[in-house]
Amino acid sequence: MSTAIVTGQPVPGSSLENDLRLLGFEVRSAADAADAAALLAAVPADRRVALVDARFVGHPHALRLGLTDPRFPLAAVAGAVTAQPAGREALTRALAGPTTAGGGTALAVDSLADRVVTTLDAEGAEVHRPELGSLVAAVPGDPQARNEARQAVAAVDDEAVRLRSAVKARDGFFTTFCISPYSRYLARWCARRGLTPNQVTTASLITALIAAGSAATGTRGGFVAAGLLLIFSFVLDCTDGQLARYSLQYSTLGAWLDATFDRAKEYAYYAGLALGAARGGDDVWALALGAMVLQTCRHVVDFAFNESNAGDPADTADTSPTAALSGRLDSVGWTVWLRRMIVLPIGERWAMIAVLTAVTTPRITFYVLLIGCAFAATYTTAGRVLRSVARRRGRTDRAARALADLADSGPLARAFARLGGRGLPGLAVPAVALAGGAVVVCAAALSDFGSALPVAGAVVYAVTSGLVVARPLKGALDWLVPPFFRAAEYGTVLVLAAKSGVNGTLPAAFGLVAAVAYHHYDTVYRIRGDAGVPPAWLVRVIGGHEGRTLLVTVLAVLLTAAQFKVALTVLAVVVALLVLAESIRFWVASHLGGAPAVHDEGETA
Image (cartoon, rainbow, N blue to C red; front, side, top):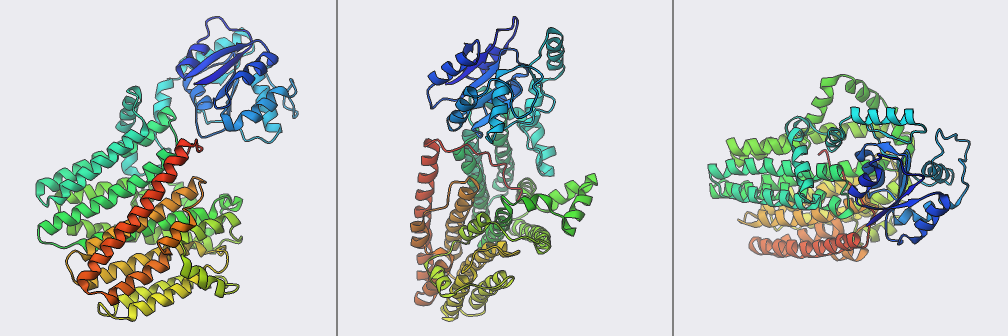
């Protein structure tokens, strides 16, 4: 249980202590700084603790935002400051410091909590201050000011603000206008019944899996039910994030579940559509696998570009012509929504898939999906390339490490990297990555199944992959390296499976790519959560992107088409078991070990 230390003389008629108890705090009273310090020292080290001025006047949700958000070690609003265990030492020092405001800042009201925040700022501690908007948080200094503050509180509907803030500020058109207007109330309903975001996330996954099963029946009724269930799954997918924001229930495990379950839901639905089409005599597994490859590569482009700019102050002041044009377009209202729609964010994409599933065939659904995603990928990638070309600064060391981790280089690539000396210059890095990937994919596409040509292409790919990562990836376009590697590996598996001509090989390839893609997504979310990367032994055991590509091409030469199908199935199972076991172990251990809370706003793509 958390502890709130209310400082100063109690104010008659104040609801502060009751509000704090409703927020889960055990309330203690302190007459002055010395009493507060003694009470603070008595609070167990593993508890959250807050200092709150007894004269505080404000909305309960303002206190909730300032004192209960699990993502920040230190946080404050006017008249209140809180510390989680990671921030306790800094809070204790600040409370024991000068009892008058420092740093040349004059406080309108002599508030112990505000003096502590001033000291924390002077010491360089990072204190989170939530955006309150129309919410009130104040420490009135006299009866007239208190009366005015109370009137301001009464003039604003605390619950309405809380509901509005549960919805993401930036979202797609479909989500904003067709889902969020009512899903926020579903989130509140869940909160009042004690449901957690993780439970809603799991319900969304189960609903999507049922939708995939309905699509797999291959009947028109099954397709209609699948479309409706997919939309409901997306409603729940929006609800879990809104519930997290509404009740401030954030966690590292929750962010991981939300992100990975989104991918699992979509790709399981692709498989369900392919199974349903097969029941009707139409083999669309190649289209399903192609859609998964394209969508995964889109996400890698997003992740790699964002990570390449993470932590770089220059990225916040983009003065490129592309950024200027984007700013002008954003000044025209309708272009904002048009641009959000044409990139097919998850809401628009799932709505399109659901409607097409219900009224057309799986083949048409995949054709439209592939065309739409290809256009969206071209649009977004072109804009990012133009921004990067205009960039005048190199990438940070952190960005280079993130790109190297996203590259997923195995023992072969690392060995060739050591032989590559100082590496490739400038724009040769992404160019060679693209050329090496094109060599192996084209070799597989232009030769018959069982030919040794793809093996030669895979060897070239392994050599070029090593040259590409021989130096830190700090070039303007080096963020293109991970998506080029993904496209080469996944594309090779797709082409060889299609070339085998044996029924069941493409589903096996779908399983393999899904297992490897999960590993790549897991790497992304560990990086984004500042949780490190998958262990080196795992990367070595599953071979890295170049090792797996070479292995698949060798299997295609040594085995018959029927045996190749079995080999892909076994490989998919082995990779899936390894990456899932390690991933689940890591995230559960991090959650139980008290990892810092994270709230992932979700991918627009």
